Image 1 (cartoon, one colour):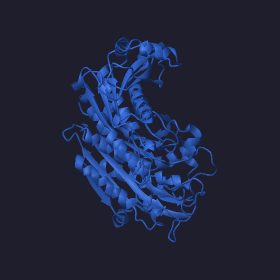
Image 2: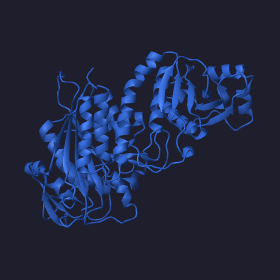
Image 3: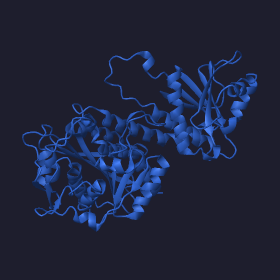
Image 4: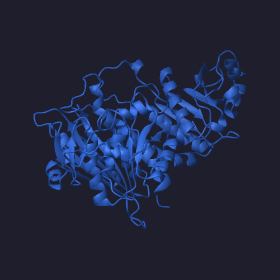
Length: 500
């Protein structure tokens, strides 16, 4: 779908979209259209339940005398509450609506409204972002699909007085949307196509944006002592990998220490010898969503030329119950030198992260470090599919992440860590065990395990198990991979770490 910005002018064809405020208050464009059409807009509203509320749309057949074929009334709700995030939702919902009508082109009037929370240029730019995010489809493997099942909309033109301003605001947002698309594609790929080696290769895409990409194979990982990561993948025919992404967007900064992002990349998780039930196991292709978010976030920063030094690091493994698979009660030596008693091979993501976290803090000495992982089903029990769970050693850092989540809609909720939880993973046979007795506080136990492999660097763990995949359409994301974390991390950097 092509998205463009143009000066205000009624379209010559397609659908013409005008806004209606709550309680059927007409925007200037809607009022002008109503007058031109002899009251079509007001009569249409009077004969329906349409009130102009948020997420309401009303289609009206255009009368004679106008060149376009359809009028779409878009509910804006309360204008003082229509902020940037609301504009994104409006753009996404509008695209979803238009794709059901069969329209191939649509023109949207975006105008200055008194008491509006944002100006028209900002609104148009964020509507375009929401439209692009909602228009996403992963259909590369479909060979037969009926035309009426395909989205119809081919072009969306946003009318705004200051076109140059809208385009300038939209430029960086569009680069972030591209990164979200890339991350969603990675999460959506089947595991016979996306595995540690092929995912590592796809990271090379980022070199086009000036990112340095390093790929470590099993021999290198073994030499450096990454026994925790390698133990997870040893039952698979697919060799494990670790990828380091270096983006230097602020080479002259006084503090050159990077912000670091670490992602869990289990490209398929059977649970290993502690095998999962067959029902729902197909979902485990997205157990690498944390790594996709990190890769996407680094692309977003590099593509929009963010003035920051950033590191992305992902541990890539496949967890299979092969003849050489890790066994419950195995003890492995991690990159840190600490030994881990593996009591459940399905608590594998924390083993991967343990080595990658240690490597990143030891080599790069980051000013802050964040990890993203579909780590525990327990976080879904705690928070459902609305929030990611976060834990860490720095309250201020958690607050910054929470603010970024509220701004982007990728919301997070802080859970505690503590000494009592830490004692629960003491092992009689090794330095630490990978699970605690019982099922209580499962998400916290996962975070507490990771804390054992973090030293003094400010750090937050983000458990995205409940938000990495959506079982239903939302305003800005169709059912499927969400790429949760890409926009969250990009906004976190924009608000807190970019050089002036």
